[in-house]
Length: 182
Image (cartoon, rainbow, N blue to C red; front, top):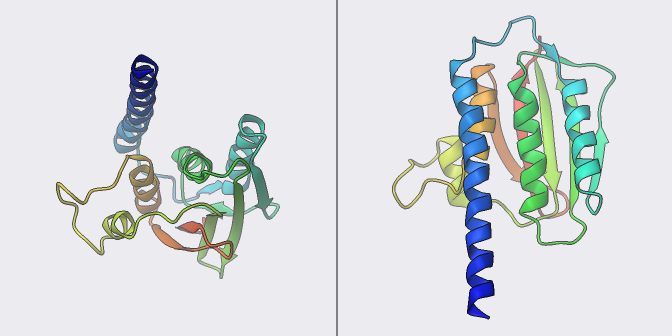
């Protein structure tokens, strides 16, 4: 019935608003936090905790992880929010009943490290990727659909790193946070 459809639409809108509020609160905390310690943090337990959290919360998803024993990067506790946001996006925006998410942490030579989240879902819109990477300006009609990827971008940049996008070998996305090693 029309009432059921309207109720579902209101529930979706409330969920979206709740998500935006959480993301805005996290961005507020990020912007008011001190700069990350140059000595860095071991990102492996941060990524492992995020993977474990989503394996429990999303049992239908296949979440693979390839993590070294230890890898120190410039960053702080907000890195966990960024990684959780990327894993969440890869699951939520994938229409499959069993989405695939692959999370890897690797060293990129002596100075850099990468945290990569790959999926088999629909590609992030080119316009959204271009705005986030600075290849296009944000306008009233071209601005991105939420705050989650902006949070990831700002976490990377305040640590001296960068956010980038690619295509996974499964035809989905690879979102990479490149950070200086600590």
